[in-house]
Image 1 (tube, rainbow, N blue to C red):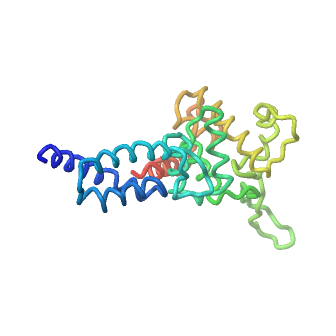
Image 2: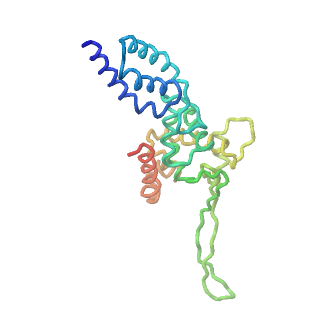
Image 3: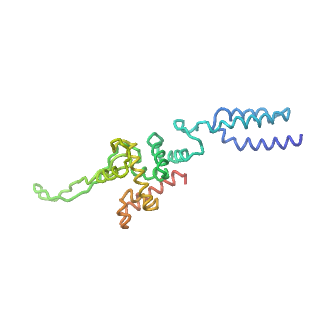
Length: 251
């Protein structure tokens, strides 16, 4: 009887340690826990304890096949990089197919998904594949009729799609980073994301630093190599990128 009490205490500790896990699972594990709570706490025979252990070991083999309860639209095991990235991404984005495609493509290209998600958050916070940002310059122009200087707005270029590719360099990026036979469409989020991540990967490998690669994505690799990085890129873009990383990691 003394030995059984010791075993009972051990099993009690096991039950408490897996109590949190039971909240994230359905079916076999919960049924096992209910069995332990209702039967093992008032056992009539040591055989019940043996049955519980055997039942628990067999039933928990199916835990790896369970769906995660939090994001039912995505299927993955709790051990994968994709799972971790999705959990982190949910802290700065509303999870959808675009967000999932960013993560999948980053993993496929062997790039840290969090680094990509962080700069995409800077470029396109709402993950709008049709987004267009205009780079505007204001100039003073002499108006003969009004006989005074007027402020004229001049659109220098446009940034397009998920990765906000500058219209001046889109063709260069496509020629270098678009490997598929399909014609590139800057507003197709799958096309845009693939080129964007391949561009970032190239910058990451050339500069050997995520911070420099991030600033190069925003200001151009030439400005980084020449040490002529705009102040806004450092104080705003890079700073927000670091904040996005920390927020995703829950720091």
